[in-house]
Amino acid sequence: GENVEQHPSTLSVQEGDSAVIKCTYSDSASNYFPWYKQELGKRPQLIIDIRSNVGEKKDQRIAVTLNKTAKHFSLHITETQPEDSAVYFCAAGGFQKLVFGTGTRLLVSP
Amino acid sequence: SAVISQKPSRDICQRGTSLTIQCQVDSQVTMMFWYRQQPGQSLTLIATANQGSEATYESGFVIDKFPISRPNLTFSTLTVSNMSPEDSSIYLCSANLETPGTEAFFGQGTRLTVV
Image (cartoon, rainbow over all chains, first blue to last red; front, side):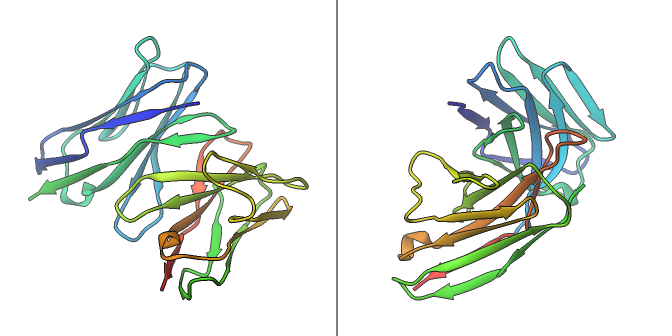
């Protein structure tokens, strides 16, 4: 089955810096790669996703890249703000099932 | 998008008892899932709730411990049976819409504490 690894587990940046979180997956059949943001005590919220027929997607300060050959995908947050502080989860799979990474705790200091 | 209502939001239960968690979606969805999230950990899929048939369980989870119902396309329940302190966790319901894609929406979660 699918296995998703996520790095780093924690990431501290200064406000305005960029943050990059990386994930690798094992199942070449996976075709959907979402990223979720989870604030303390809240439900996971989708922030961006990418499908296997696309290499890159951007939404304002957030971008995701996908390398199908290497089976890895990354989340890029530019111009970070304190409100970006949260736990971020990557996931891989498809309509039938998603497997989540272990999470990255992002702390953005003012 | 879909709105998923989950209840209860939290509960404290005695060991050996059972708790049923309800998940209601405001639109018909094909796929519904139940996840467990231990404090500070990732989301682990318990099972896929299949409408009109038995749920599909992931490795390490069994029907006797986590019976699931899915009577229609908008509702599902997860029961945590014969609870022990190790079952203390957050349980999350999730659903996928057929359109616009495979985006998964989550309920607000049920924080379960077993004493």
